[in-house]
Image 1 (cartoon, rainbow, N blue to C red):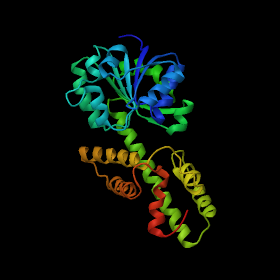
Image 2 (spheres, rainbow, N blue to C red):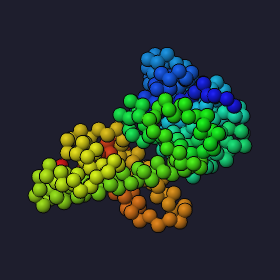
Image 3 (cartoon, rainbow, N blue to C red):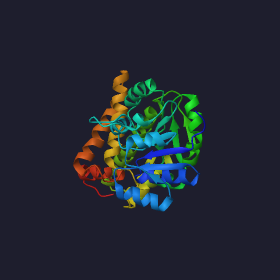
Image 4 (cartoon, rainbow, N blue to C red):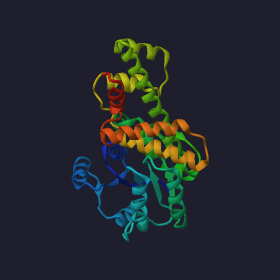
Length: 302
């Protein structure tokens, strides 16, 4: 099948809304879908594109479908159908493409591919990193996995939404690395929080402690400047990613390690702490509010 011109986009939330907008601006013929009718109506009115509430109809009308959804279970239900209802793939003909840009479990991605491949439908995993700010300005890091042919076909879509595209090679590789990347960042965030809480308990001033950590602990992905200083100490708590989704992503990393028989004790303990924060403070608070767990246990205030 040739170039992708007609694109379906399922899930126009905080991230998906901006990503879909970039596709419209890049000239793609876009059809959007979301369970929230008011969000769809507002997007269509603002960007003069198409919409549908029928999964099969969406599959019939486009060359490729992008999913940007909370979990891989929801992705599977939307693509293959659920509860005796048909899914998007039931409307797709041979040669069409599914691009899952959600943070999905790689085992679920491979299982979905086993079904799609029997129908001649391609699948790419292409999760994103960078948060709402990067989605808004089109500078997302997009990690991709799948056949080279399918990745080449989708490259113009990725270039419209992101500034850096990282090729992980095999299908499921991108979802694997997205979960692992989030685990590393999540572990680093609570490590930094713990260091700050001990420093404050000793009596250091916050600006002194954060300055010392910044001098000694550097690196693009280190959350000390971006999250601890930028959101926790400032009181903004607005990175755009909820505690519950971080916990979900770390769980994917732990499950992947277990499935492979890999030794991952740090990942398991990181998951335990993030799930404790989720259970104590709720699913929706910003990820930076995980610091409240250390405030409550150590008796300090950031």
